[in-house]
Length: 234
Image 1: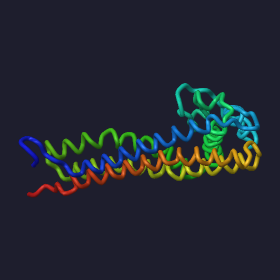
Image 2: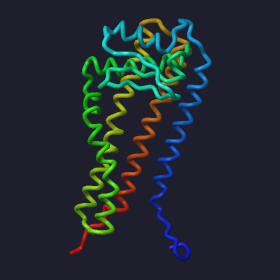
Image 3: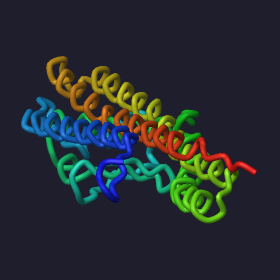
Image 4: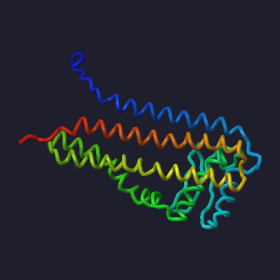
């Protein structure tokens, strides 16, 4: 107890570490992308053109390439079979844009070849969403009202589903980046010097997923420290 009416919770340090990691990763990817967004590829391809060419070379004709507003909002939608590229990627001819477009094509190729981690992640999305939405309400009811150790354990399990989703995401993202670099090298869309910049952009982007997973794990650890020992004594 530090002063009247104030309680110091040392587990907040875990939340702080997670937040700092996420902020660092976000700043890193933005600065790295900004740097290589100014380096134009010798091929002259835009992000959209590179994506269309990669998909064609892979024999994938059922995926549309569309523009989406925002900055670095690029993603592949496996349900709609649509690859969406952001403002800074779709029409840009930079090595950063081509790299990001190739990464999203990596996801489309994963979908086409039934890459198991992608299938598992897609199937796990509703479980993770529901789990993260109901985890805190269940924990609070279990702790403050019912004083039920069982409810607390269920809440922790629901929160863990979100953590597990972050961990499942890692191999999917790393594999998509590896596919992107390999394709860009084999097709000659980018030369070796340009590939160095692309690797840095994709590595920085991957760190955002690593940071998100680390932050989730730290939050889970904090919940275990706070609520894990609250077994009801009869």
